[in-house]
Image 1 (cartoon, rainbow, N blue to C red):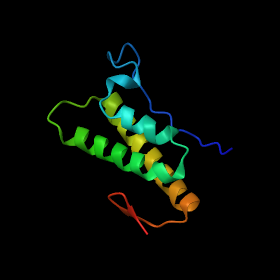
Image 2 (cartoon, one colour):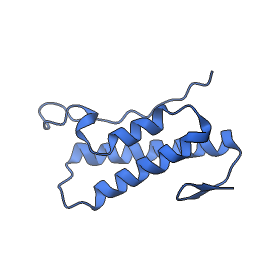
Image 3 (cartoon, rainbow, N blue to C red):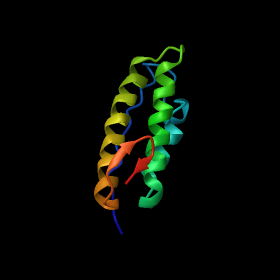
Length: 101
């Protein structure tokens, strides 16, 4: 069995705002799905979906507060690590947009 470190996405404290769990961020479901995926054949799809969800969040007109912005930065670093793990484990080269060869 393979164990993978899942990046901890920071959340704000009660005094910083009301977002005290990850479910309040619109992109976290996709991120958590990517982080918890253990099937290498499905991993890249979840990673691409999480990257897309974060990108969509960043281009919305809704305000992104400091705790969420920090969480996005950490999540993006975590996704980059997951992508690197996928390349090693699958023996594939990642070209973006879910394609590999």
